[in-house]
Image 1 (cartoon, rainbow, N blue to C red):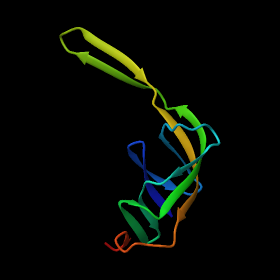
Image 2 (image 1 turned 180 degrees about the vertical axis):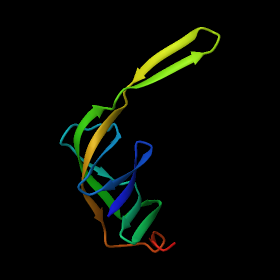
Image 3 (image 1 turned 135 degrees about the vertical axis):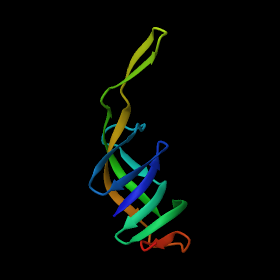
Image 4 (image 1 turned 30 degrees about the vertical axis):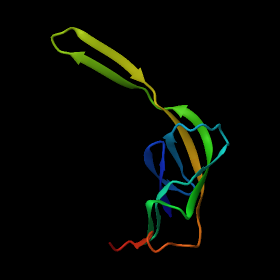
Length: 117
């Protein structure tokens, strides 16, 4: 079972027992986080697609750490002008361990589809 979650303006595929790096959250290590903007839930051949979100589900996780990614180099040059700019950037992220994908028993007809489409 996995869930597609929207957070930080991006969408991430989250599975129980695995960790993922997402946009920086305002949380410290060992804090509990809950994602409620579930775009899609997939359980084998059954799936639920939200309009825009699946309201009957949440994803619980624990913050492992806040860190920075590897440095990337941004280099800009204008030919024949003698203009060169070199910059480095390290994007901050939060590593989250996914503990549980919670689904409630009620299911709306408008949200439920099968995997045969």
